[in-house]
Amino acid sequence: MNTSHVANPHPILPPHPGEGAGGADWTLVRADFPLLQREVHGKPLVYLDSANTGQKPAAVIDAVDDFYRRHNANVSRAVHALGTEATESYEAARRKLAGFLNVRSDELVLCSGTTFAINLVAYSWALPRLKAGDAILVSRMEHHANIVPWQLVAARTGATIRVAEIREDGTLDLDALRAAMTGDVRLLAITHTSNVLGTVNPVREICREARRRGIVTVVDGSQAVPHRAVDVAGLGCDFYAFTGHKMCGPTGTGALWARREHLQAMPPFIGGGEMIKEVSFDGTVFNDPPHRFEAGTPNIAGFVGLGAAVDYLATLGMGAVEVREAELLAHATEELDRIEGLRIFGRAPEKAAVVSFLVDGAHAHDLATLLDLEGVAVRSGQHCAHPLLQWYGVAATVRASFAFYNTHEEVEHFIVALKKVRRLLG
Image (tube, rainbow, N blue to C red; front, side, top):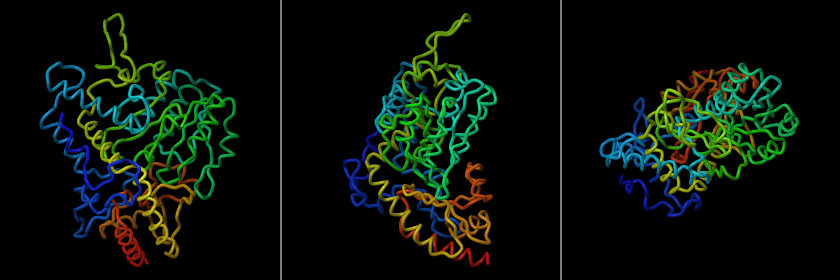
């Protein structure tokens, strides 16, 4: 499959990953995203919902289109030319993701995203191993995808759920977390970056402490991988899950990284084609990991697109992405702090470009609805983090989340629109 059209999406971008933000022309980078050129309600779109899903550069869209137009076939089944091309492209995406995260490709299970990945751990690793008297430790700031699967496992095994609390500024109480790592804790589920607070947790330190105590760690990397360089091998975790559509890739894509010894010891989660070596009515011999956990026809075109997204982000350089987004976050936070009666949730010293807030006297949904009429797309609600918002004592917040393709002019537009909306709401 010809992927030359996605290997270097912009000749003006830095040729080597990791260069500073000044190495990219961000105006031209923004032009790579077709959807950002449109209007809504007769006004230029200001898309501030990248924590929900990231927008797609033309290179990703073109890669998916090219696959369906020129290479569409199933993977790992046919020996004809199209089947070979499709399989090579699919496995190339796995290798690109592995290189992007500094892991082995045979330790990377391709799946529909973080939710599936965590459920895979829950049902293939935790369910056969946990029992009454065991504890699963989760943090207060987890997304429901890193809470509900553990509740389901606990209900079936008799294990209990224990909560690691946070501080008012949205940081984890690390002393309390360490104290909660008692002998009955078998598994720790922790987010790398909070989707509500933007808090970037010290995952390497946390995993080191857990490993000393024999606790298996599951890290939700959904909000980290799209926004910073992540060396999964260096984190010291046991499992790492992430989603492709938040990192400029197609929906329905993602992966689970797991230590080789875990993958080899885990039974399959779903049975079907591709995950087997031999089937008879007397029994089945399962395939080797990671294919053992990839039953059925996968989202082949989606992973071809995700491979193109990895190429695109690698060309930008994740160091440049992180610097750019930090600048946008600082600008937005400074402007929001000038608005009387506005409360920001999450003031961690190390924070991703996410701002959750409320304005006195205004409901979050009203703010988001009126901001949309001004062309500004933000999210309102509980952000799939009910226990976190309950802890803060609020029913919902507005969340503005930034990505490298946003601009400082858009930050100003957002602030002007927010002030206008606030006046309308009295």
